[in-house]
Image (cartoon, rainbow over the protein chains, first blue to last red):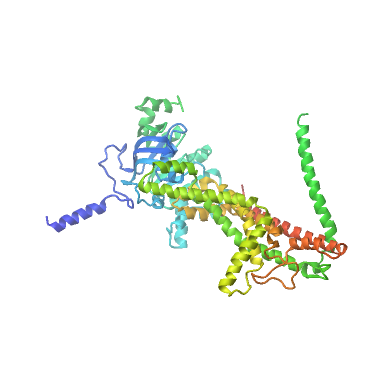
Length: 288
Length: 322
């Protein structure tokens, strides 16, 4: 093999390595992943502090690609905090500190040069309380596209808005009211609008912080069906209080308690045959 | 019944206020309304203020207040945005304790934060202190600083010592009033910004918006009704203040309307003062005095009314169907 060919080969290897701006191919070499696909995001030895109080202790967990991972645990166990470290929303809070690594496609999102704005486009978020902007339905979905300059023309914008609303299973309900205030929608519709808004910027990962906790059972069911559809295209990480919900929609479940990850594994296993006594006590309702 | 005593007290206190307001307003309206006419509103005073109208004073007041708004609102809103959105939300003590532990680059970052915290603290103290300064002090300050220092300085450097800006003028009166009203705008804007729900900011940031995009596209539109309220309050306060303009630009009587920034001007509030203290014939000026006060009141009230209407319309725009 000549010197030139060798160089060529190594360059090829380098360019095909996972980068923060590109999706990697599915890697099969990861034996620790609790499912057959590779980890889209991985948290390694994460400690998180509010001021001097340590609220997350040495968390290590993988979030496999195109799977739903549910984080469960009692109030104040740190599950929402963990979720917010995954797209650096904790940056907005004063006096917080992160130790350890959070990897997206193998690259540390807390590395000094990481563009937080780009990161949050790739890792979208839906909040507990639906929070549409006091703008029209259309402008809500278009918001992320406009601020990030993701579309070149009005027709492209309209197409992306429609696509996002369809993906969020909301299009048929709002297509005649696109230019009315989003606050006119029902609670469940507002939450699906927030999901559409997050989807519009085409994220790879979707973080959901108890997205259905403020909704009635029918609206909740719609959101759950939607999550089931969305996992075909997105990696979803959902925090939920509701264990039935975790059991219904997730592939992997992680149980947190007092800032520690007690157990993580396939949802079926966690809910039928957990390894830790504490997990069993929690899911059977003995505490929490 | 135990409830009778507090309820009675509340009723009496409320009653006193309503009666006082009714007496003051009633007195002014009853005595002033007869003199109000189209001619009164559109002609200048004549015969040593014993006849004629108040048009130059209305014009001067509106012009003054417009200049004041243009000067005060942008500065006030920008200051409030800095204080509420950009100043680090921590106390100096917290930063100092971190500074003591930090080394190298981190020390520099913490030091910079400490500077910002101090700047914000000094600004906040300045705002509250400014709000407590008596308005006549502003008037004297305006005379010393704007007229004699800035104005005279401009004349020396740009006009070769000719008297152009180094004298009382509407621009100096407007700037003095702007200083006086700045705290109102800052406090109102800060409150409006604080009232914007945190989850709206989060939603915007989570979509990849920068801090400034979030502020300009989500926070400010949402806070706009509150900011407008602050502006309107400022305007009606500024329209009624006389002390700050006494030495800085208000004139006893002018044959011309002010058209340039360095013109003097007539003012409704000052005109009321002149009519009630400088008239050669008190009996003859009394109806004019009442009518002038009525005009001033109607002007401030209608400004307030416009503000309330703008706010209601903006609120309704998004609350429809809720």
